[in-house]
Length: 291
Ligand code: SF4
Image (cartoon, rainbow, N blue to C red; front, side, top):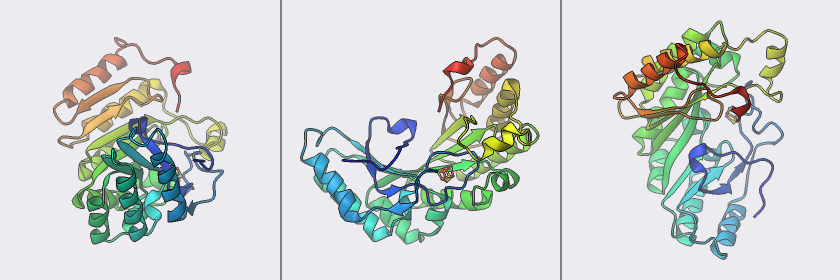
């Protein structure tokens, strides 16, 4: 099985079989993202994806995977009937499969009817990973996300209403130093409106390939300093009312690893951040951070 270009997957899919259903990202314009910039988005033929499944099914790995993650950045862009054919093939040929997940953009979710989303859930798509990035429309516009906060919230709510679990990612630092507080408050509000099963919080890192990097180098975009990032994270969590959501800020890019279930663990998470802000907790060294 051969992949086209670099492959990305959520940290929680480390043990999953990665099947490349689409290549690249249909949006591919976010200023902070370099993941698929070298790829032109296209949808692989159903036969090619099913051939990959058959290759795994006929080898020693046939029963090795209970989870399948459909790459790349926007697997839901495919027609629903084609998705369902692929899901059926996966469950038939790889009988150990217990769940299928993928990334989905707000646009690809918006393009599906409620009935289509329900049929995808019934066909075995158990969870969708969606990037909110920020709940602030000003930040989303500046970052060229291609969707407003209301559109992203609506997409997330429709995924959950269809019977799929929802994992939402937001990025600490994305509002820059000047927009930090608004970014934190509005992101907390957006997460509260979606009530996702999982919330993943990353910290913005600019390494050179992102379109935003030029603004950063030229001083047109300023990242909050370490204390500012911790304060932003504290404000975000304080404004997130999402009962039952598992919150993880344990990505390699974060200075402080946090994990808890909202809302019960919110006071503990805030206390951890207060301790870090007061210098009573060690933070991850810069060289240990990565994406
Ligand atoms: S952040 Fe997501 S939607 Fe935006 S360009 Fe990257 S992969 Fe595409």
